[in-house]
Amino acid sequence: MEYTQEVKKTTDPIYQKISKVMPEIEWSVHAPYIHKINKLKKDKNAVILAHNYQTPEIYHGIADFSADSLALAVEASKTSADIIVMAGVHFMAETAKLMSPNKKVLLPDMKAGCSLSSSITGKDVRLLKEKYPGVPVVSYVNTSADVKAETDVCCTSANAVKIVKSLDVKKVIFLPDDYLAKYVASQTDVEIISWKGICIVHDQFNENEINNIRKTNPGIKIIAHPECPPEVIKASDFAGSTSGMINYVRDNQPKKVMMVTECSMSDNIQVENPNVEFIRPCNMCPHMKKITLPKILNCLENETGEIIMDKKTINKARLSVEKMVAIGR
Ligand code: 13P
Ligand code: SF4
Image (spheres, rainbow, N blue to C red):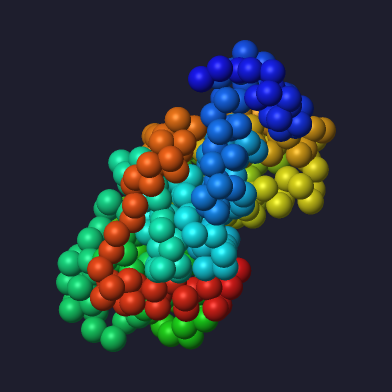
């Protein structure tokens, strides 16, 4: 694909926005794809939903809506597009399909999974329900539709505490993120039965690293995702979902900040926060990084990577996501 004058002209306004985080030589590779994808999505009445961990050329170049997983689920239920392309991972595309069962939902790489989602199956949940009869099941949205179908109410990192409190019970089964379960337990009086799932990205951070960064960067604000180990969250100034972290930076404009999360977050929001210095020890999600512009173009052009689920699973699983959306953030 060529970086022609026409491509340069139409994509230049986007490049001007992100030139701080991308050299022009790299842009010349992305721009022809961005040009073609943006045209094609109009022709096909498609919408591109992107998670906050997508790379800047996707987040700023082609996404119609970029957000955390809760807002992506809500947006999927509202769109009037015929096709939804999920620039994210498999559970996000499945959730979009649950919220918009009559739309075509496409995922550019079917192998874009999630260590949390693959840690538990619907059968595991059925066994837990047999072991703890009558105890409600709260599942993180980072789960398969089979798990959601066995779930009373879903949650994301943005509303986990609120969802658990809303049940007004003494005990809940909270799946599958053991660290998020510990975080919820620390914020409520509810007894939590958890599962041993972890996020391979956030599990890599440790307390020493955080303390060293603080020592060498006086005054820095350290903000962490609740999928981090509890001691990392304790050593941080704030914990919140990816959008919660973005809002924190936007509202507080710290001089220096470290986002204890996936690497693309700092790049993406540096654009809108030019006066904030981002200290960047970060970890990459191998699943999120499977999504690229060429794969998005291919899936949109050929309508490949369609999410197909049987009606029974859709109807059962959708209830748990709808209950979550009704409770809100
Ligand atoms: P958010 O819900 O905070 O966006 O994070 C979910 C996640 O783990 C994305 O991989
Ligand atoms: Fe899953 Fe962690 Fe990657 Fe999010 S960052 S998709 S939780 S592995």
